[in-house]
Figure: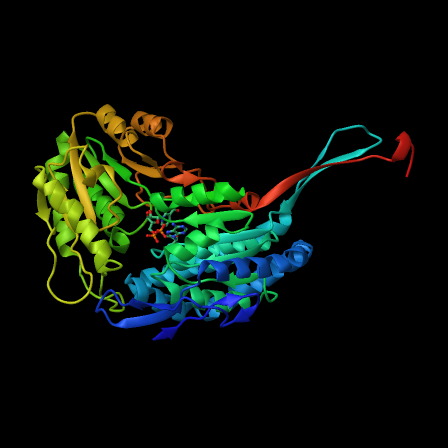
Length: 477
Ligand code: NAD
């Protein structure tokens, strides 16, 4: 059982005047952690305390900040096992996946520590007697609001980039993974000057208070509805908003691909982390020529997944994060079935404790079903049969989201059409989770705004200043 404490103004255990909340293990319902709920006035005090440290951290040499972040990455590495265990206990994913998320987070911290001091501004070709240049400066106070589905990897990216560029940061982890956020903050704080990082805990109200507080940037990774509420709240105070939000990523399965290989790709995309990944496969457009064989193979793979608690190394499919979320997933599946879709495997609520939901394949879907158009965030693969690649592209593009898309095809001209025509941040051809290190993209429409990853995230957390330096009276200094 974890007892989470807050870190405010460099002091652990501060605040928590609004009581506490409890997190239960989604595999068995047992209590895992308790954490304080920060009310709005406490959030404001924490922001004021953080601002008190901003000038000092901003004027710390870039190399010194980078060294501190490298030491922080080592401190996180020392507690990697503990972090992975807390992630699995709080949100349910298989331990090996949780460990992978922690490793990814540590790698990102190290990457930002290496990259940040090497980045700079530029000099300009102005009057030769003067000096003109552009230099990046920290933005000041950054609020970071993160989700539960990959809590360490996502938080490390935002925290690392914001801190190493000289900002002070207040992190509010998801109310579903507060102990994971607490363990991470303890490790980071051990290597940073006191007060540079704060940890605030609580639910949506605490998050809303932070988004409305006097901060300079609000960086949010989470659902689209929350992102929109944050953008509205931050607009009142003029803070910059960075949003990495929900998606409904399509997978196009072209004619002539091997249906068994395509089913492996689809299963990986739809069922990894029980479908609780922002770039999970949320809807599948399969060409009529291969659709039947493809769906049969996908059903077989779904049925073969071993369901169990994340801490059991044999588990392929852990529980969903909680029963509230499971009800939402199941609601979308049953609504689709009521409208004529056919549940080929899964789609039933299991008996017993926990928030388990089986890997589910639904065929005979129409493109306009909520199950197809909206983010489900569960282990569900809805299949729409299409008659041409053009129809598949048209359906894939017709979405309120624009995060990523995958195309499985043997045709180079189809691959070229896909990356040119799909209005999404990332297009992957023939690899459902493909991508090079440090890749970053702009999400489109409901999926967010700004770079949430990659070296470009360092720029998001700085503001460029243009300087003109000239001697008085046009003479010499
Ligand atoms: P969420 O938006 O509900 O919560 C994320 C954070 O925002 C939490 O800390 C939460 O407390 C806070 N929050 C909630 N309501 C708030 C409000 N009104 N004002 C301010 N803060 C508020 O999201 P979630 O359920 O934790 O995460 C799942 C979602 O995250 C999915 O939609 C998924 O696609 C998305 N996600 C996106 C990416 C990406 O990179 N695009 C990555 C991971 C997850």
